[in-house]
Length: 214
Image 1 (cartoon, helix red, strand yellow):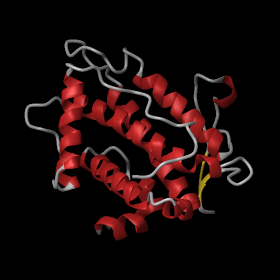
Image 2 (cartoon, one colour; image 1 turned 135 degrees about the vertical axis):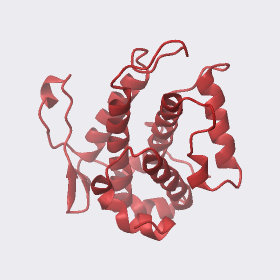
Image 3 (cartoon, one colour; image 1 turned 30 degrees about the vertical axis):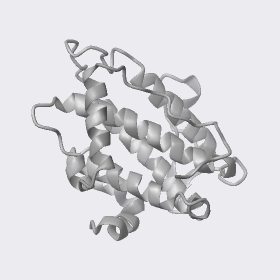
Image 4 (tube, helix red, strand yellow; image 1 turned 135 degrees about the horizontal axis):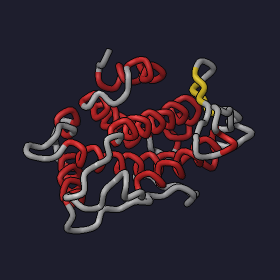
């Protein structure tokens, strides 16, 4: 287990005990704690609803990636990381139609981008209209498309951390944990066809070395 001096990023969302999502979360966590292969752990359990499974994992990955970034955020500054990038080849700009300053894509420093991303994601997962709190309330028609956008953007945190802060991850002993989290994330997005292959390209070499994927 690793720790961070910073408390800026912490898990922000929990499931209410007794709900379907709480039970699914327990089931998913139990699989991860066992010797079950991650490629099997991500599969939709029999008789479970697909959107509920997606909702649980959006929150789980949000929490985990939050914590991963928290281990290096002290070293990710506007001076050290003036762009949200993955090496010289990949750069991401922030866009949010609900914010006047970001109606069009805007280049921002990595810590600003990730701060905006985490706030944006948290607002969505706390919105009962997008993530209905009760099983008898249907998910909105655009739920899957929103989930895909969240996962695409969360993937960019992996890209930035691996390209620019991997040395620090290794120094603090976080590398095995982060690799496992990334493998879990990768298997999940592939299982449910959430992220296009071309968008996964920045970590293609890492993915191949970790799980033998092409």
